[in-house]
Amino acid sequence: MDKKDDTLRALALPFERQELDMPGRAFWLRAEAGEAMAPWRDQLECLQSFRPAYDQLVAAGFHAVESLSGGHGLGLVSLTKHKAENRALIARGLDLLAADGMLVCCGAKDSGAASLEKEAAKRFGLVGTLSKHQCRVFWLTKADAADWAAEGTPRPVPGTDLVARAGCFSPDHADPGSMLLASLLPAAMSGRVADLGAGWGYLSHQVLGRFPAVDKIDLYEAEALALEDARTNLAGFGDRAAFHWCDVTQGVGEVAPYDWVIANPPFHEGARTDPGIGQAFIRAAWKAIRRRGKFWLVANRHLPYEAELRRWFRDVETITQAEGFKVFQASNRHDR
Ligand SMILES: C[S@@+](CC[C@H](N)C(=O)[O-])C[C@H]1O[C@@H](n2cnc3c(N)ncnc32)[C@H](O)[C@@H]1O
Picture 1 (cartoon, rainbow, N blue to C red):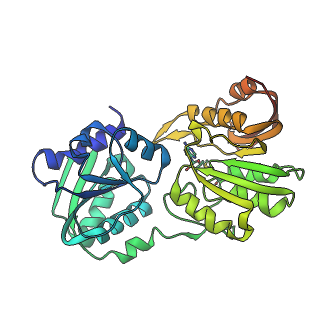
Picture 2 (cartoon, rainbow, N blue to C red):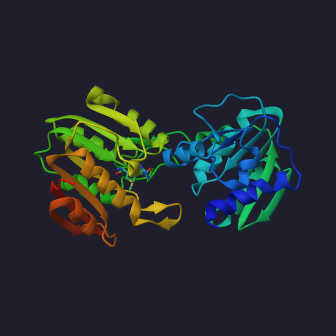
Picture 3 (cartoon, rainbow, N blue to C red):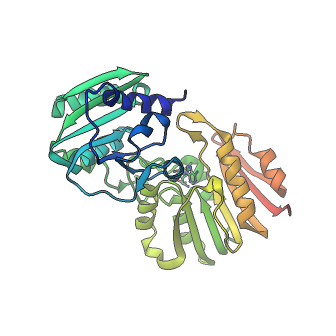
């Protein structure tokens, strides 16, 4: 059992024990596919802004929705590891409830669910709680939480003139790996560019702001909330930027090949380090790039990306190793 399964088993418990009833229609914020919640698959309207998890919900037959309206008798929240995002999720859930509705929240203890439960108890009062599978589950009735809702709004990122919100990657500062990559990108950048795992648009903003010969950049990002902030951040560049809600590990689709691809790939699946994600990004870059195109990648130095780069590209150069990161340029794609 992994951590996600534990959280889903804990979330299912109050319903299995009949401490709470599942009505004919309920919502679920940050929903995740899994057998433990399958008995209520038809009742739950599942909201999930992270594309791989959204795709898993759809594949498992859950009812994934793009938006929700209010007036629900019951709502569920799967808590994340981000405190401010969790407060905003709870506020959103409370807002979506009918006057007599109930909100059930569940999260792993080692992601901070116990301290959030204490805060929620103090602030709103709780109707019930349980502790199982290394998780905390707590439920509460409708309340006003406008101040918690505000924690989910985009905020200025210090040191930049961009915004990002809680729950996105590195919303409090530009990532040092991305800053290193940006500082090294060659002035020769031109034509069509793809930014894989573009987040709230830091790298794309650098590219469009500094290299006027770049006609257009396509931002590919799995987290829809980050992509929304990227849209705000790049609004000044008009149609030089395009935005794609996409699981890059599945490729970026049939596209006209790019002159340049840039990436600072993710290397975590939940709490687990998984270099397979970055390796899949490398394959996606290979597939999307033109024959003489150039792929620039930054990664933590310890990650095993070099062999994968050499598998797909003839020329792989380490541009620098600094501050715990490596920056590579890969070019001359192999034909496979
Ligand atoms: C290391 S961050 C880099 C973000 C951004 N480029 C920057 O410089 O701030 C990696 C980004 O990849 C996104 N991501 C994670 N898994 C992804 C996937 N399967 N497909 C596309 N993007 C993904 C994350 O949401 C995150 O924004």
